[in-house]
Amino acid sequence: MSLERGTVHPLIETVINLTAGAAGGVACVLSGQPFDTVKVKMQTFPTMYRGFVDCSLRTYRQDGLHGLYQGTMPALLANVAENAVLFACYGFCQQLTRRLFGLESVSKLSDLQNATAGSIASVFSSLVLCPTELVKCRMQALHEMKVAGKTSLAYRVSAWSIVRDIMKTDGPQGLFQGLTSTWLREVPGYFFFFGGYEISRTFFTKPGMSKDELDAALLVVSGGIGGAFFWLAVYPIDSVKSRIQVLSMSGKQAGFLVSFINILRTEGVTALYCGLTPTVVRAFPSNGALFLAYELTRRALSDKVAAI
Image 1 (tube, one colour):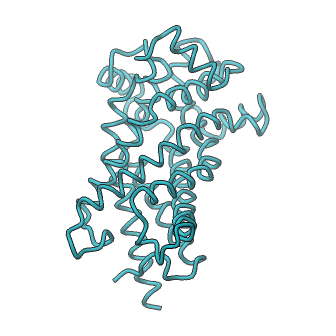
Image 2 (cartoon, helix red, strand yellow; image 1 turned 120 degrees about the vertical axis):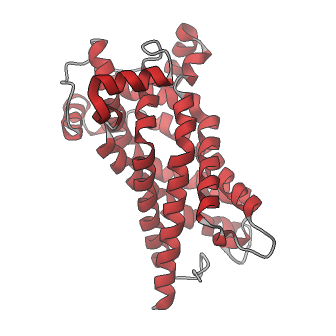
Image 3 (cartoon, helix red, strand yellow; image 1 turned 90 degrees about the vertical axis):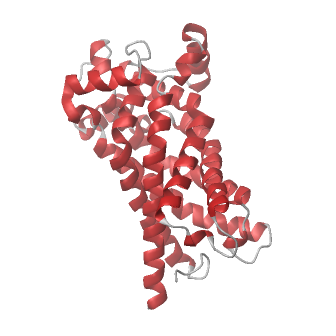
């Protein structure tokens, strides 16, 4: 039987959540990277493709399977770092929320209280996510930037060469382009993410059972629902963020509000939802895999600690 959250030393619990979150990040990327690549391409250049299938096929014909997995290494770094910090902070924020409401244990938190803890945790995870996601987005949209004449970089570049280019052009602060947009997406997004996940787990839990006893299939479904809730809630914000991070390759890019208004005026509301289909399709397998890997890793590590 796994230890209940909050019954081990806080430092050990943080390490468990950190490790489990990192495992979840790896599972998320490996299961959903092609969909994410298509999403970024369609968000950044909405008039270049007719839809999800067209973008996928043209990317495959242009660069093969490698093209669909472009940016995988920075994506792995982004997701491992983000989810490790996110879930470590999530555990801490759950404890903080528990104390604020005077509850005996984390298991007594309501689904909305868990959602609030996740939202607060995203403030910290965004700081490690933004630089790595910036590099990932630029690698994914490199072909389109080349076609549009907005960059002189070669088609095939490494993550490190993009980092060097950013540092040379904008300095260390350049790695945090789109941070405001990232916070605007992550803070409300993770409220829906953890809220959708916890509500789903509550729905699937039978009377007399604990949510920690759900089987793998129900964990995957709950994670997929949480991921879908996240993207449906904040997708327009993510579209603006992708534009800012990718198009800043060709020069100084306007801030979030100016970019948002400019897209609405010149391209309409539909441009903010371009690429939504592959994103929602990806949400189920990738976030299902994320939470499955997280929960199974956390339970396994908790069992080992209990056996010591």
